[in-house]
Amino acid sequence: MWVDCVILMKYKEISVVIPCFNEARTIYVNLERVYSYLAQNFERFEIITVNDGSTDATYSELKRFQEKYQSMIIDRRENLGKGKTVKEGILASQYDPVMFMDADLAIPIQELEKFMEALGDGYDIVIASRFVQGVKVLKPVLWYRKIMENVFRHLRILILNTGRINDTQCGFKVFKRKCAIEIFSNTRINRFAFDSEVIYLAEKMHLRIKELPISLQNPRLSHIRLIRDSANMFFDLIKINLNYYQGKYKISHGGQSRKVQNNSFSG
Image 1 (cartoon, rainbow, N blue to C red):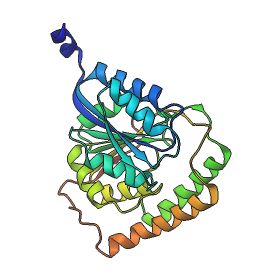
Image 2 (tube, rainbow, N blue to C red; image 1 turned 120 degrees about the vertical axis):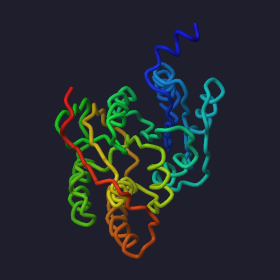
Image 3 (tube, rainbow, N blue to C red; image 1 turned 60 degrees about the horizontal axis):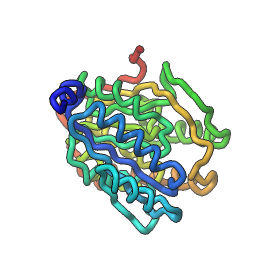
């Protein structure tokens, strides 16, 4: 019976990092969905949940899941931000590739299959994008989030010169592990602009990046604070640029030519 299961596996291994902040209402069921998909498609996998100082019962729900299924919990009593949380999870991972995804499953775990295929085609990083052809929006974004997304995108392109990438902010990214470890060993942004820092560093390293369209179900609840977080994200973009030109990022600038593909996916 075990032999039959192994034959059916599509992929060898993966590490999945899931940052959590006040997700008690849905996290157990969502983790079960992730676990079920991974168990059906991977020979070996790990789920790393990182509790970012939640003030509800998130940690209790993570422990309840861990008691039934195999998982790793990194528990932080203080809220340090999504960037810091993802970084800790990535650096604690052991399998190749490694990915992170949002706890609310706004992008379903079933999307992972086409990301794995893209890695197999030679890309170093494959990222979800809301701004390429083929995106399916199952539930529209909240109006103020839409405004923030558009303003931030233009600021990010202007300040960081990363216009080759349409969307840096989707919480569903898959990395070859070697690339992820080098990038996240250097990240310094702790909150929402960390995704932009990750892509900024990847481009400086001349890594091969592919954007893929996804099915997106925008959550009705949001942890983003409109004014405060918008200001923080703006100043974090400036900080990323300053960090680079001040030599604070110790990254290689690989010999491979940079390749970005953002709209060639079909299917």
